[in-house]
Amino acid sequence: MDIRLLVTNKKRPILSLRMALDLVVASLQNDEAFLRKTLGKIDYHLRRNATAHKSHRLKREMWRAAET
Image 1: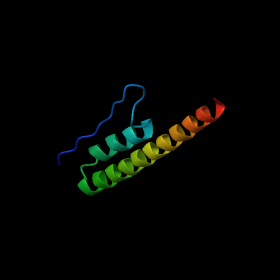
Image 2 (image 1 turned 30 degrees about the vertical axis):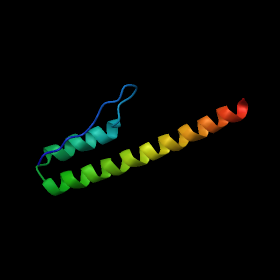
Image 3 (image 1 turned 60 degrees about the horizontal axis):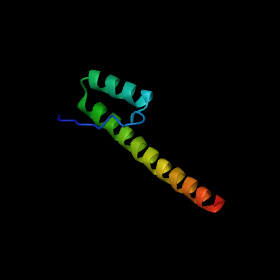
C-alpha cells in the first residue's frame, strides 16, 4: 500500500497529536482494512478542520472590514 500524507505546515502541524497517534497505531496493526478506516477518519477531520479554518478566516475578515 502506497500512502503519502502532507504533514507539515509553515505555522503549525496539520495532523493533531491524536491523528498522528491513530496513524501510528493503525500502521502497526498489520491490518490493511483498519489502516484504511483510520486514514478515512483522518481525511474527514482534516477536511472539516480546513472548512472551519476557512469559515473563521472569512468571519475575521468581515469583522475587520466592518471596523474600518
